[in-house]
Image 1 (cartoon, one colour):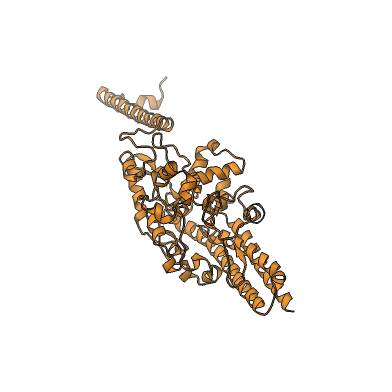
Image 2: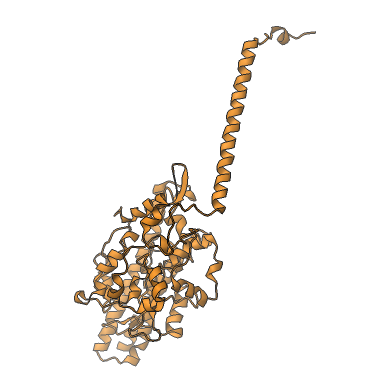
Length: 450
C-alpha cells in the first residue's frame, strides 16, 4: 500500500539527475585538489625543516658583507636593512639616539668620574652599531673620554669573527681601538650568527663559549630554541675587561662574570671574591664601583618568557609571511613596535591592552629605579660631606661597601634593555634591595656624625 508522500513524489528528470551528478563530481575533484595542495604544502614545509637552505650564490666563510648573504636570502636581508630606519620611539627606548643624561640628570652624579658622565645615549638599530661607537665622546680624550682597546669593537661589526680568526681573540682585544677601526667596515649582520654553508645558528664570539665552560656547561649541546637566544647573548650581557698576560693596558680580555651564575648576587661575589675588580672610584664618595653593562640575557633568564621557552628571536625577530613564504624578520626591534607579529601570537588581547600592560610594568620599574637613584646620590654626597668633616677611611668603610653593593644592583636593572619587562619580579626585588642598601649607607654616615 503506497503512502501519500510516495504518491506525490515526482521522478527526477534524467537531465537534472545528470547535472547533479556532474556537480557532485566537480565538488569532489575540488576537495581532492585542495587536500592535495595542503598535503604538498605540509610535506614541503617538513622537507624545508630537515634540509639545509639552498645556496645559489656561494658565501665565503666568515663573509662580513651582508649584501652577499642577501643574494641568497633577499627577504631576510631587506628586513635587516630596516634597522637603518629611525622609527617610532617607545616610552622608554626604541630606535632613537636620545641622551639618558639629559632625560635623567641624576645619572651624571652616579657616573661622576667615569666616561658615562660624558656621554650616555640610547642605542639605535644594529645598522648604526659602528657609527655610534665611533662617534661616542667616551673614547675621545679631547671630549672628556679615554682611549679604548679593540675590545670595544667586539660586538659592533660582522668583520670581527674574521679578524679574531686571523689575529686570535687575545691580540684583537689588546690592539688599540684606532688600530682595529679601519679594518671593520660592516655593522652587525649575518656572519655574527649564521654558518655560511648550512645557515645554522652558531656562536662567533669566544666570550660566551668561555662563560659556558666556566659554568661547567657545553654550549654545543644547546637546542635550536636555546640558540635563538644565545646568539643574542654573545653581546647583550654583562661583561668586563680582564687582565691577561702581556696586557699593557689595565685589562682588555672580554670576560663574562658567570662562573657562579647569572644573578646579581652571583656577579657581586665574582667581582668581590673571585676576581676583585673595580671599574672606577667615585670622586665624591671615594667608593670603588662596578659599571654594569647591559645584562639583558641574564635578566631574561629570570622571567616567565624564559621559563616558558620563549626565545629572544620569538619576540624581537618574529616570523613573517610574504608571498606565501614564511621567514624570520631580521628587522630587530622592540616588540612594542610590532605587537601584531610578536605579542599577539601568544597573547590574545587587543594591541592597545598589551601595550598598556607592558608600560605599566615598565612604569613600576622606572619608579623604583628613580627611588634607588635618589637614595644613591644622597649616599654619595653624604659620604663626601663626612670625609670633608674629618671621617676616616676605616670609619666610612661600611658605607663604602653598602654603596658599592647598592649601585651594582641599581645598574644591573638600569643598564638593562626593556625597563624591567623581561623579568619584572626579579627587577623589583633587585631595586628594592638597592634602595635598602643605599639607605643603610646613609644611616651609617648619620651614626658617625652623632
